[in-house]
Length: 419
Image (cartoon, rainbow, N blue to C red; front, side, top):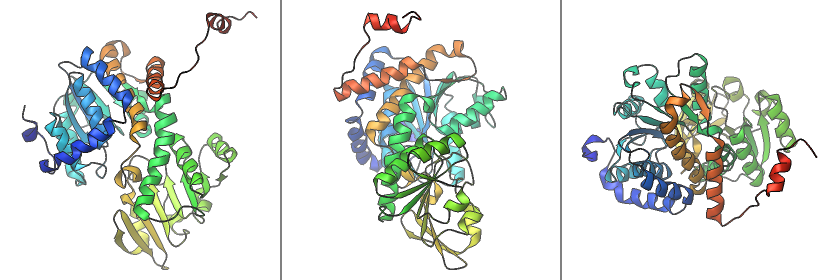
């Protein structure tokens, strides 16, 4: 197959730089390297087609190469218009992976890339945000028959999957990778926590210390964003709809209040909810002059851009990835990266060492679904604990860290109700 002619990428002359990026992350992903060695021997995907929709940058590219090493014919597309890196796309094509992705496509092109990826008739999928699953279950049901199952990366995607499952409409098994311990404890908390502030800081070039940061949502991603904001010297306010998470945020040392009040105080706002319109008209109307808005959820709907635009008398790009909205009273509100994922649209995403564990989970979960899809049935399932623990153990070994093991007597004690 001629992957150059079959692919849609911006510029194949960018491939050299893309290879350098992929080589760099490979050196910092020892767990995924170990999975790759296993896949090369076992060939779990021999003769199968795999379709991937993820943020298409170097770490994702290396995951695609690991799946390819397991015998798969791989096709990949982006899961966010502003997170695709064109040089990485070109490098993947040179490595024999079909790519349908460009940086900042218009909505029609973005949709076309997703559909073309599915038109390769995959046996297995890896999804981010549920775009592939949604298309398969709606307008392109003709492509469903061959799909054995797949794995989902995000909270947003899992919400979509569970809605399908609840209605009895899910047509194949999907592993909820986002809900695995090695995903939410490390990727969501430490990965999001660091990469969000990487994106905000490199984009704005402004100080965080002494400022007030409003974190909208206190799930695992919100915990990471708040923790890192505190570490940078900010005062942190958390808004929540869940009473338990609100108490947790309070006991973690953060102020907790409704968004209607928090909107008056924030210098930086970071949305991390997976829901829409969590910052909207009534909030824009009371924000301080110079407030900076960003999103670290999945889709660009958490900040209501339509209402922000309607309230403004003018808007302009004032710096790369920063749009200025001037309100009728002269206040200026700034939106980063079009309200898309600030850590990827305005940064390089999570650190390689973090994505090492997440993408290792994706790879082994995909292999698990391929082995067990008939027995699993049409449901959303958690990553089996033994796979989660295996990835953690590989990580410890890569770090040169050993841990204790239970003695036979201790195992017996834990398994008994008798003292």
